[in-house]
Length: 465
Image 1 (tube, rainbow, N blue to C red):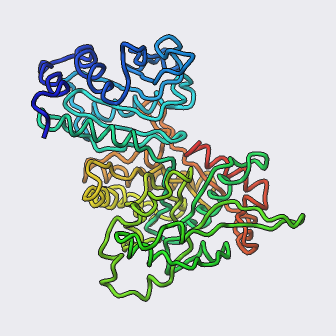
Image 2 (cartoon, rainbow, N blue to C red):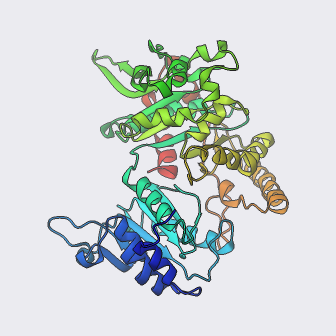
Image 3 (tube, rainbow, N blue to C red):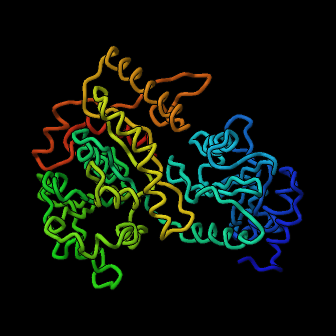
């Protein structure tokens, strides 16, 4: 319950039902919400009508803590949080036209060419009736909280919740590799994505700290392809006893290392190998009952890594559900010639991801659904004719989803599509022998092929950096 005498509550109550953006900024957001988040207007840590650096675009409010040699309101660069406001009579409820518009607006402010916003980590949208917190990791912008409805009894609690998420920011972005159809290259993508992200910059990589989780004990392809030796403590043991803290996740992590011709051994990324003990456990095993434990377990090392990549199995099972619940975003490889792959991706968007988002809110109140990134074509040679056929098939699926569920999947399949520029392009990684054959050398293709490095660099720069 809200403190009846809190200045935040009183400020919210002072707003008229038709309060405009200026009133919401001056009475509520600047003096109360941003102050509670640690930014002070009188110290020059808040700037209204902040130029993002992209054309003439300006975000309503930006804030940054002052440094020893610069006052943010004077320097006007390097904002760390931005707020986009709408009048109180604008409908920002989830799914509304205005809500979708303001989310697109916020994401536009956070694109790479908006150079005054390149250091922004957080974005907020609000009309005083609703508020939602977004996080930026590289070029990925995704909601942290649901679209929260504010009232006089919960405003203190909800703003404190937003503060808690900001104050406890996790370094890692957690990515689930998922498609309900098998054989689309999830494992190949996981190992090469980990490889290119962790490869040193001098070797055309990104020098990031990466953890890969093989959460498919039935196939354990990633573990086998990389020849990862299992750790002494198994993941099933760690998950099953997590509440009792008998084991630490550090006990489960191995490192992927390679010895080169100069006989030096280099460590590239860390791995949690597949655990076949999952397959021998009874249906009432502790980890099956304790849903959400994989997310809780990975949170122990979320500040040690830049990226955590989970190779999830197809289907609708414990492992798939835990992987998606644990993830911030979902990357879905697909095949341009697979109708079932497209249908499964659409089904996941329409039904599976929202359901799993609800599941994880049982232990993370107001945590948003995991965010699906646009699909990409993986591992097939494509012709213009086959691309056109795939596009037409996808357009039919989009039309059906809009008619039956009032859900718009256009930018999930075609991320560059707008009403003005009807771009139906889909990112693709073509199939070449050096990508698949590299697996037999127990090395990601990006370690052995310059061409493969180029393609996976494109993947990273399309989605993550």
